Length: 335
Image (cartoon, rainbow, N blue to C red; front, side, top):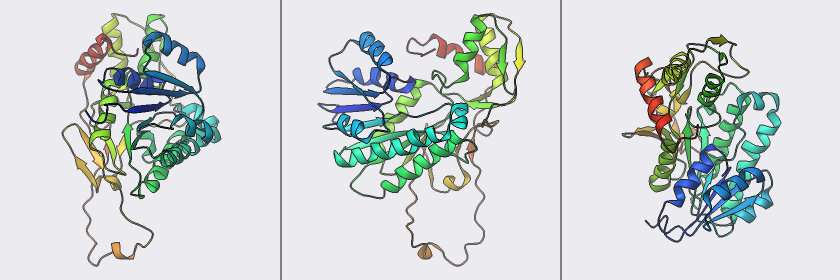
C-alpha cells in the first residue's frame, strides 16, 4: 500500500502499551522504510530494542514538552501516531500542571513540528475522559482535542483523533491489576461493583488508528464501537478463568473517577456518522462569525442520547468471561 511503501513513521510514547503494540504491528507492514520510537524512558527503549531486534526501528530519547526534541525526531517523517500522554487519573489529579505540560503543551509541540516538517498526516490518541470531563486528566485531554481541531481548520494539515474507552491490555486498565492480585492470592480491590467500562483490545485500537489513517478527513474523531461490562463481572470472570476464589475489597471511587464511560457527547452525536464498527465525529465547521448558523424556527431539536458504557451492548457474566478468556489466550496480548 502507498501509505506504507518506503514511508517513515513516528510513534510518540512508542514504548507504552499502545505505542509498542503499534510499532510491532508496523514492523509487519511490507515496504516500510523506517519506524521511529520517541519516548523519554531509555530503559523501556532498550527492552524494546532488544526484543524486536530490527534495523528498521530508530529510537529517539526526548519529551514532547521539549519542542526541539520532537521537531528533530519528525524531520523526514511521513506519518505520526501521537500516543505520548499522562494517562493515570489520580496522578493527574494530584499534579494537574504536569498533565497540562504533557497533554496540552506537548500536543501543541507535536502539531507545530508536523507543520514545520510538512508531515502528511498525524493521528492523535484521546480518551473517553475528554467527554464531559470531571478530572484533570480528562480536562487536559479535552483541551488537547480542542487544540488539534483548531489547527485542523488549516487546509494545509491533516489531523485526525481516535478516542478510546477502557483498553483491556493497557497498563491503565484495571484488568492487569486484578490479574496480579488474583495470582498473588490478594483481595481484589474494587472501587464500585456497578461501575461499567468499555472493553476493547489493543489490536482494536491499532485497527482504529489505521482506519483513521486510511479514511479520515481533517478534523475527524474516530470512536470504536465496543461492548461494556461492570467491574463486578470483570473481576468474577477473571476469577472463573483462573479458577480462584479471592475475596473482594471495596475501596471506594478514586480521585476523579466516574461510574461509567462516555465516548460521544449528546452535542457531538448531532454530527456523528455511524459506520459498521465505529463512529466518525465530523469536525465542527463553525467559525467565529456565528450569525449565519442561526436560523428561524430552530426550536424543536431532536434530543439525541450520548454514546456511553450504559447504552452500548452490555455483556453479562458469561459473555464477559468468554471475551476475557479470548483476550488472555491471544498471543499478542499485553497482560
